[in-house]
Image (cartoon, rainbow, N blue to C red; front, side):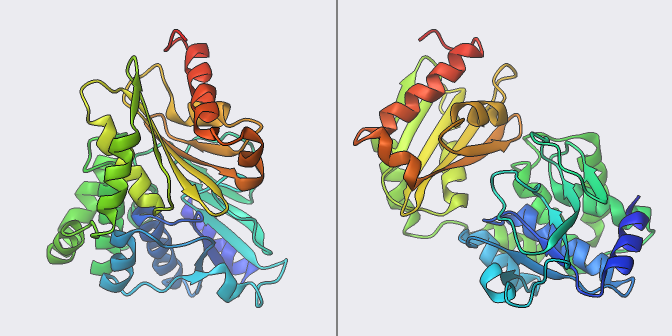
Amino acid sequence: MVQDLINLCKERGPKIYIQTHNFPDPDAIGSAFGLQKLLEHFGINPILCYAGRIDKLSTSRMLEEFDITIYSYEDVKHDMKETDPIICVDSQKNGGNIQDFVGDEIACIDHHPTFKEEKYLYSDIRITGSCATLIAQYYKEMDLTPSENVASALLYGLKMDTSQFARGVTDLDIAALRFLFPLHNKAKITRLEQNTMAFRDLKAYGAAIEHIQVYERFGYTLVPFACPDGLIATLADFILALDEVEVVVVISEREDGLKISVRSEIDNVHAGYLIRDALQGMGNGGGHASMAGGFIPKANVEPLGAYYESAIREKFMDTLEKMGYLKV
């Protein structure tokens, strides 16, 4: 299967871009890096890029540990042409969390559900615990041994996206673990897994705890200031750990709108469907059954008034009622 992608890149090159979602996490970075190095083996030299920010401590440290170079869209957009091919990794065109670049999205490699069908010349969209799993399989398929840095980056992305193999794990993820584990650098992974929180993160924990509300087993909280995407997701996991909570929504204020993270640990509430339906007409979002994210632009927040958080909470509660989870 990956041979088709290699052939496509050779036909459409020489300039190829690999684009992650707007706020790349370890899985997105590791997957893009792994694909880049695999294509380089066949004489293709892709450029890694993203829009938004790399604002998670573990992700920025990952770039240093594994010698990864990735460019912001601001750095590459002046050189990018409409005909330049783009491979979307750990994301899908019009998925709500990826900016539309000037180039032509010819391929997609992702492990999230598809909410809107898009046509690609190459597509590999499978529901797995991480996108890194799919890239690891490509190496196996081509009988290639990834470098220590690539194996470590893929393994770290796999571990982070599955919450240390406790969330959304499939047989393919376990096979990727078996393949990558003997090849990775244990010391580098250990360094990344230690000290993953910055001092400034404590303020966000305090705000989330101060504003938390629980309705039946639905937890909802607001962080009334901007914080990194990765931290918002960590806060959602933190609240989900409460015995009284099965479904969580965490909102963080941004200058340009509201960032939202959703978690669910029960089968009858799909986090991706919940955020997609709740934000309909206000913003966009999506994700897995157990975790999802979304965004409401500032222009759509202002009409909700001073108590916008209550209006958004009601939207989520109404959606949960329609799912048969809450009795509002």
